[in-house]
Image 1 (cartoon, rainbow, N blue to C red):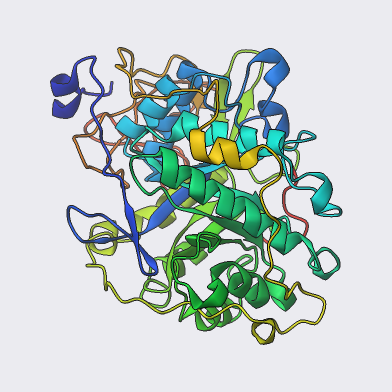
Image 2: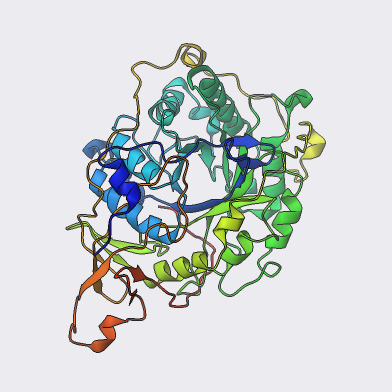
Length: 481
């Protein structure tokens, strides 16, 4: 059985602030207490895909405490320190889930949009979707998550610029939303939570997208429409690739002088399958650190697009770990994250380029930096705040045990799983949570191989050590919930 840690005994039923709010300094996330640069070891977290966000039934990925406990414990075992959540209902209470992930040592990257009508910018006719009610919803997401110390950043858009055809007008609207969100944060949040854009890896216009969002209008580095961060959904490393074969070297060269933090907001090609996740060793190496601030694996739960690490059984919320989970875990275990996360921030700042038409190379891409003014009614919300507004806060948690059944990829039932609450300012790393113990196998329980299966080996302490069943992956047409 899992032995309670000293931290858990000390915490009792109380939840303290396990993570230190980070700051953006130049092109790095920095822990202000240690002065260390932070590398994102992230996981895309949207159980149920787009259907997991269901306002009509009061459901989203961070609304069920028991589900969040289950997933936080398993992601703790992986070594995840950040989750990205795409679609959230600002009308729901997220205190327990946010508190659980906070105690587990995990930050949250929060998208402010959703797939529902009126809750995102329409990239075909962006002017039709930029209005006060839409912005009210984005501000409500900010209000709901601003008080959690583990809220790392907000995304003002995700892959809104999908190809060259839509790049003529939509960038100015996404940049306007970024401006409005940043002004709202400035006026109504006690700390500067960064706002930025998550881009599709469309290489022909990627550099233009980056320059468009990071440049300074009239050369003003304090221009409120500049993105604080720029993130990339990239699936160019597939299978047993390499730093050069995948084109990662080109990305590092492209972003070498970035004025803002750049990181992978999604990665993890899924063809060929099973996945290998060999890019992990490159992302957290000297090849990329200093330019990239880590990345977010796509994705935690198995959906129709076949990118999942774990499959949820909707009937009883039990979960089956897939072989890719164990593969990713071993790749993380092969990284010296103590060294990775202890590198001092350089505090080096590259000045942003000035916004001007010559900055944009592709003739189809927007090169007009005259942004739309806030729509009628929006400026009053930006100045005075929205009403009514959700209020989020950390709360005490009195239950850390996983209540749903969990099986490893060989069908063995794993018992004794629980979230390990961490001390103040401690971020999760591989090995923080050693997992539980094997209770039984789902079938063929008399088979002696069950005592040390390919997926889960019993350690002498009784906790599980999950090795690797080698795997692979590729991209093209990745997700779309």
